[in-house]
Length: 163
Image 1: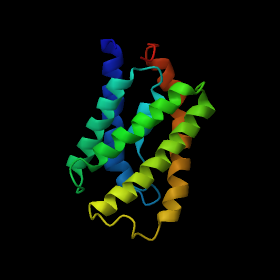
Image 2: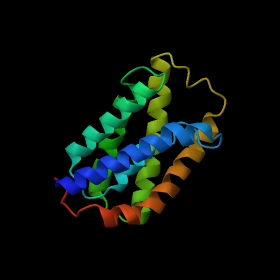
Image 3: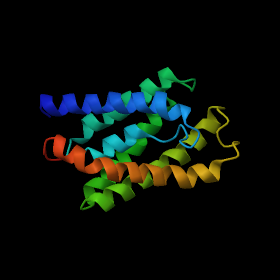
C-alpha cells in the first residue's frame, strides 16, 4: 500500500466513525448497528486483506472506547465480519450489485453476531423489541449506502492487487 492509499483510507475511516458516532446515533430511523466502517472496508475494493483487518479491528476498538459496550466486543465482531466479507468479495466478480449484496450479507452477519455476543456479555441486545426491523432495515440501508459510495471510492483509491 502506498502512502496515498493509507491516507485516504484513514480519512474515510475517521469520517465514517465521526458520522456513525455523532450524526447517526441521534437519528431514530438509523439504529446504532448501521455500520459505516464495514461499508467502507468492503467498498474500498482492491486493497490488501491484512491492512483491512487491522482497520476493522481498530475501528471496532475505537467505537468500543467511545461507547458503553464491553471493550473489544465490536472489535471482535468487526474483524470476523470483515474477514468473511473480504473472502467472499475475493471470490466474486465484484461490481456494484455484487458489492451491495456482500455488504448486506456482512451487515446481517454483524447483526446476528452482535445480538449473540451482546447477549453472552450481558448487554441485553436480544431482548429488544425491534429485532425484526433491524434485521430487515439495517442491511437494506447498508446496501443502499454502499451502492452510493462504491463509485467515488473506486475512483479515489489506488488499483493495487489483492494479496
